[in-house]
Length: 180
Image (cartoon, rainbow, N blue to C red; front, side, top):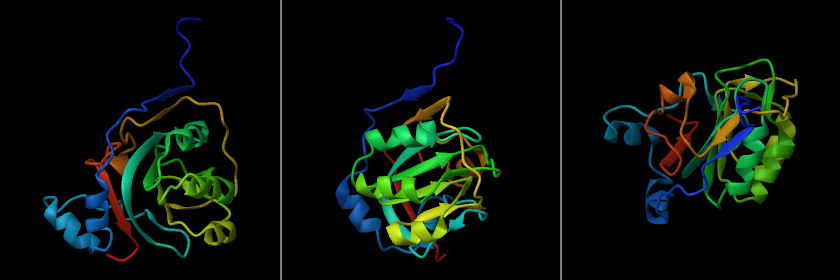
């Protein structure tokens, strides 16, 4: 029994970006932000806005959910603070969604300012009704499991998020825009 992997590991005590920086970065062009970060930091070109809303800035809350599972993403809502951006890594898994309109609505209720995933999401009309920006690699109606394992608050571990946004760990400033 001691060898069994934990379903969830959650880091609750990371320091979030100061509100003054979130406000200062909120309307800056993303290209300029990347230039100021040694010309890196843009999201992977395959990750795009899914709904109508496409710009935000907040504090990163990283979630490593693994393929076909979103237990960690749901748990992240318990530690999310107003203005957080939830970054969900799936390892680039594309055959089941990691979030849908129900999840996005609950995230909005928790004060989340946006969601980014290297996976796929579903329920585009509901996501548009909720109104917070969601960035993903595409759409897929298949549902995920809620079994774990997963990690919240530790840092991005997926290549497609990490390669483009390696500076993003929980607590870091996270601006995004559908307009480059």
